[in-house]
Amino acid sequence: MSLVIFLAQNSAKTNNKICVVEPNNIGDFLYDFKDNFENYNYYYKFDPYGEIYIDNKNVDKIKFFSISITEWVEHCKIDENKLIAKYNLSFTKIKIFAKKLTEICDFAINNGYGLLGQGD
Image 1: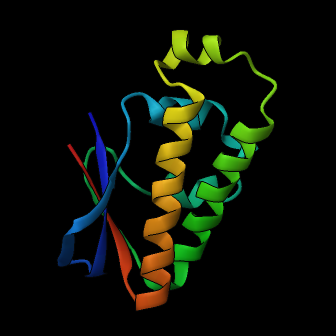
Image 2: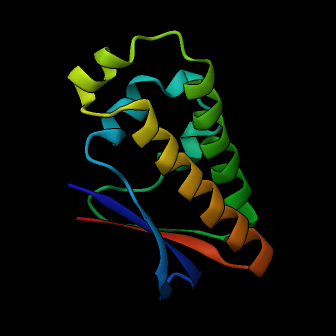
């Protein structure tokens, strides 16, 4: 199962050229550590089994969420090997995902786009 988040002008028109794909198991990781991330409840609206559109006025909440992931990784006291063993996710893989999500949010905010999440 994977979730892909696209830039979108509305719920019907996506921009397939600019997207971010959730790495495997990141949904479980994010849920387990949700109290450490700002605005997790907005990101959680993305359905890994369906489709959800986040309009432009709420993209900043997703951006703050992604920034909080990066900050968490940079200040994390957890042994990376434990994350790898449980989720098959390294700090680098998590940071790459968060950085790409932040970039897509910046582009959406600056150009009036929303985000469309499409799950399996």
